[in-house]
Length: 127
Image (cartoon, rainbow, N blue to C red):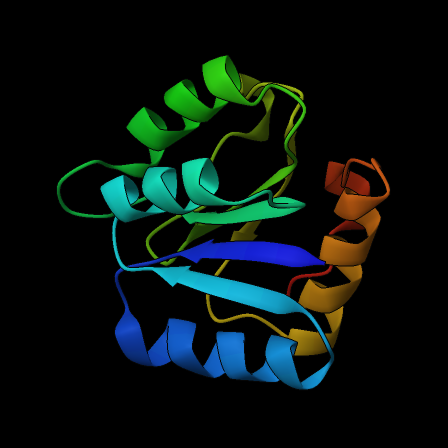
């Protein structure tokens, strides 16, 4: 998979990127929303993993722009602060996860998202 990881928590995203890379995925890290949009414009991606609460261009702003520019791109939302209301998101949002993540469950969600499967509330893979 070609994955863009957009998250301002540098240690978290670096570890996640390394683990995904070790499994053969092409990962680009974006430390903020503007960098995420630039990475998506720069090269094709199979999925966007997007932190909801980032300084500058926030997750909601990025999601709005991605929904307009790449409506078919699967998006997995992350939040370290609170559970987000999944019903309020466009169909391209495949899952909403709360940090910290269990990596194996996260990887399964990414694989499902790349296949076009949306994570439903009853199938939560969160810890």
